[in-house]
Image (cartoon, rainbow, N blue to C red; front, side, top):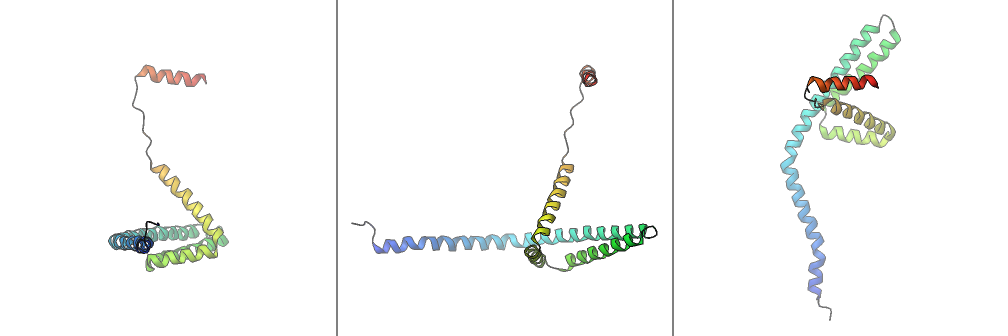
Length: 157
């Protein structure tokens, strides 16, 4: 006696497919609900990033103008870098977020070491920004006697 007939076997075998279809349906619904908001946030972030990159390009141009009389070769190098940075800012403004992500993925496949190094630098910069943004709580002022003791103890060491 097997206890399960062939009709039950067929229904049991269809459960994973039903779960997969339900998960896909839920995923589409979430994507439809969240997608426009995420796209709006990405577009605003892209615009802010483009403005920041353009600021770096302006800084490079100003730096090249400053050092031009003393070091023309360095000024030319910095000016060229500033022009490339400015083109990057224009690309950020003009391209869609999906196009930028596709370009980044293609660059990552063609230049994985540079991509990894860039990710490390960005991570380091972000950690410094976060660390600088976190306010350290200050201790409340104590009475003079305890603060004098702290000074006296620190002088001993």
